[in-house]
Length: 489
Image (cartoon, rainbow, N blue to C red; front, side, top):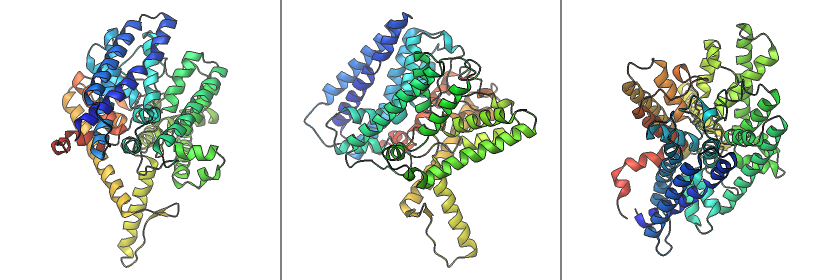
């Protein structure tokens, strides 16, 4: 491990992250909400820390290798969540009495989980509310991706950094140069942001709320500026439809969408993962709507379809916005929604979870194994969309799946151990799934209308770790706990 390169990269990353607090300062000044001092103090400390690390690690330009890139991504996210928590901590909010609360809220924002310790969101100063939503936008495509897009000289090292942050089993680029790919993806991301903000304003939101809900939608995060999310407060069908459409777009591979927008729309439909993604959305929403109507939970077909489709897309893409309390729905519908929590969006999207592509690979591998039972002499390599699934990709997918399940179970056990006597049987499993898959709302005590404020500080640290493990797909965080990884090379 070259610690000078690591320090230099982490310093530059925190300088970038500290500068990103400026828009929140501007909103605080505009609303005169009293949050200027906490935000300014946090920004100054972050910039000072970043500058100190950068100047300590600054030497002649050296190559960035895999170990340094992996450590930069893992530590970069952990440090960014720490500094992102400082505005909340300095504001001394009554609903965030400990630093664990502040760190949890910051990590939830950056990892686009959308879980919150806040009960009264509308009482929070506007500058902090903007920072809370802005962390979603920063973490959506990834703080490392933004870092690579801004800095001009990372070269091949930038590719190593991005590969550790981009989600999904396949890490494709739009161009040979990773910096150009990052810039193209951010153009699309910014374009989405502008269009959705304008549409939400046209539908009735003010500029501040439209901007914050756009950040939550495109990052598949789910933070809202209202206590009742986008449901009772707005009760606006147009707003729900706009958010629904952009959640689907955010859960789609951004590289694929860029190609479709650039004149190759058929590439979208030819993509096997996207077809699977749309099929899951349509099929699950239809089944849930039928169950809601047959159980007399809903009387109107259009209302049942609207709420079921929104819930399916919100949980599948791991956004977490709610328009209905799905815990009041029949148990059969809740089981379907719980299963969707583990799927996630497409590879290369801002959605969390295991990703649709990995599930497609797992299904194909399982199908091949089943064929071997009754046709042992037949050798048939699994394919998706006519493309052969390599042995390496199969092993990688199975490894991630196994680690994901193990992490989910260990997370549930840790929460049950810490909170024993304070929570029911379902909550540990629900909260572990919700945080690891970066969803936010879950079931039982963390249901659609609940928050995470009641958990003990120790549980919030565990849940924060689960969030970043899920966002970085395990490896970039897990290797930080391996002593051999830190040996000087």
